[in-house]
Amino acid sequence: MRKLIAVCCALLLAVGVGVAWYVQAPSDAALREMAWERPVTTRPAAELWGSPSLLAEMVKSQEAQGRKVGFLLGSSELGQTAEDSAHPVRFFAENNAGFDLIALGGGGYQSLWATIETAALDECGALPRKKIAFLIGDQWFMNKEGCTSEAFLNSFSEEAFQECMENSGLTEETKEQIRARVEALGVGAQKVEYLADNSIVARANRAIAGLGTDGERRSLLAEALEANAPFEEKENGGAALDWDLLMERAEQEGAAACTNNPYGIYDDYFDTYVSDKPWGQPYEGEPFSDWSEVEFSDLKLFLDVCKELGITPFLVIEPVNGEYYDIQPYTKESREGFYGKLRTALDEAEVEYLDLSSHDYDKYYLRDVMHAGWKSWVEIDRALCEFYGADASSAVGGAVNADGRGETTAEQDADAAAEEMLEVEGAGKEVAEDREGDR
Image 1 (cartoon, rainbow, N blue to C red):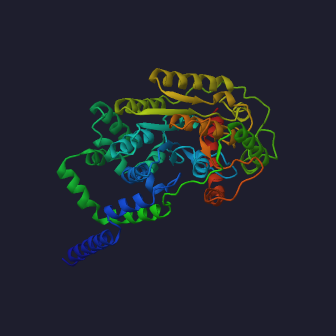
Image 2: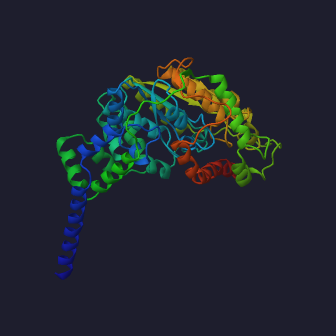
Image 3: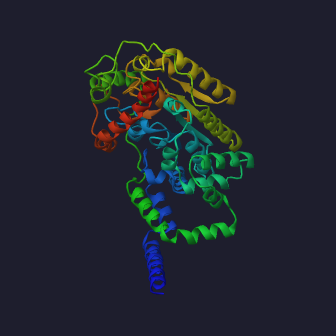
């Protein structure tokens, strides 16, 4: 009996603490107001990536003030802004290109995440022009099973999944495919059914069940929104963006960052991860050909969702460092097969894309061996300007100086995160090395 009383007391205490936290945390209405008042950021905190409703409030606030907003979905390359003024997170924060960019995603955020996120953003009204841009990571297709369970569970948002399932524009067949993939990657069948149930009773049950944890979530969202900024007009130099000059500056920044090797790899990465590799010795085994059909299927699901919802996607095929990949099983022959299959998938879906695969051997298109760098970003920035409606040849921007730039908040944040991103890049490189070892 004493044990039973103790258990009941513990449960009551836990519920009491949860309710207290729930009450003390900002209300949903307060969070929406914060998102409305502080809507400006090119790179929201990770907590906001999984809250399409608050992202939608940010978009609506900017739209109400006459600003266009576009989303860019991607992976770990979106967190790497150090020494790179053309990186979209910096570029669109510092230049008036006719629209504001919101970049979402991190390491391990792949096609299935983008599928759910896009449908959720649409359901919440965050895509008023029905457009979305998406960076495709070559490394996603190197693992036969596609996205790993660990990576997906790290990116999975219950709120985004619920909003996706509530989107009436999706067919039941497509929703079932999404549910099946979510289950296959580690979200329990009962939880999937629980989150996908849109009945009034189910929603009420979720609200009650969230009393113990929702307060913590809302507190984290409030902290994330505090990092945003109020709307302010960007200052500009009164001149059009000079894309040739921007490319020249990209060349200069790349050269300044890559001084200890001839491969266009920034110094710290080269010293830490690849300086001891057999450069110049082509891989002599059978070229890798087992590109993931699972990831291709997830990418097709993303394209199907866009088609069903009337969303126009813009995708980017990113290059890799050809000199490095040629000493791996991912040789030029291997990559040509992959790029060809990827282009075919996009062509069949009749979608727009920027193909940078021809730059595998061009310096400063990669900052390491797999992540887009200086020159790639200039081309991507220009394409985004064209896609989201600004005239890329005449978009008004901040003063572009090839010989220098001022310290910005985005740059300061990037410098602080540089060491962490170096570790992420090294972890990504291990995928290629693991494959090499298997051979």
